Length: 439
Image (cartoon, rainbow, N blue to C red; front, side):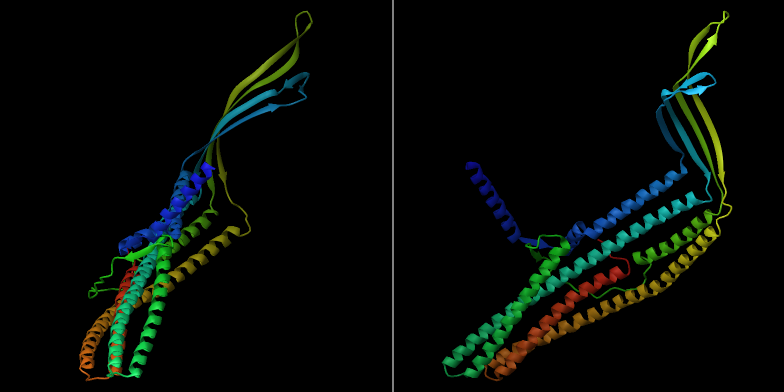
């Protein structure tokens, strides 16, 4: 009973610790977000594994240059004994052991081509690793700035709601003093309910964005992430260009063409002779020969002779393809067709990658202009709201004018938040589409 109570106490303590850890805020910067995303992403791990696999394939291909040494051992127990012209050959427990060395001398270029293909495979794996990591970083930045955007809107709506609460309190006081109308009170209450509804939607959206960010970074879904890069600085973009020479996708397409060229050489190698040199040594023993000898007096005397010795062998072999009914020629033609398709893919996708980079450049430029426009709108909306508040307190404008000014302020703040965070996402996307996005 005491042991059960102890186990229950330990489980309860562990649950409490986990609950506290889940509720504790997790400060996160953009750099930390990227780091966690790269560390916990399954696709990045798979890309790392593929790179290591390609490196092993390259090491395996290199061993084709080296001689192969194989060992052999066998034991034989054969009954009945063999009759050898009146003698018996006995192999009951015969054993053999040996080594064989094989060195290819010429294979039509297959070994060299195989090593080049393995090297291209490593380079492709490296570029695919870069591509995967850049995409993960871009997804992490997108989730991070989207989360900041929605959280900022929540705070803005909370501020807007506080302003409406103040205005509602003022109108209630005015109605009680006979200086306001029930219609004004009803309009403000309706507006306040609308803000509450928008605030609830924004909070729900912020929680969904938090879950998306947890998924990207690999944190538990209960983690309360607090972004630290909330003071977003936006500077005019530097000179941009649409150079895509650093794109891993372009490098992969180029490597695909290189691999196609090597595949043509590999197919041609099947049409050429191959030469190999072999050397071996085999040792055998426990072979007995039983027979009868006749002495000088004519008596038969049994005898047994044991055999054990070693045999060495050196052999050169040449293999020449003579008639394969056009199989190898067709393989070469097939490889050339695949090479042509790879070249066409390179041409087509190079244009598409260039278009994508130019679109990213345009998005950055347009995004910066949107930031400037949103900032100007915020300044105008702030000033308009300040003027309308003063006029309303002085009874120089209607409640409708004040509510319109507040709605304009809300919209301008929302536009500013969206413009700033979207601009940061555009910057990341531009770096990705030009192959310059680093960790």
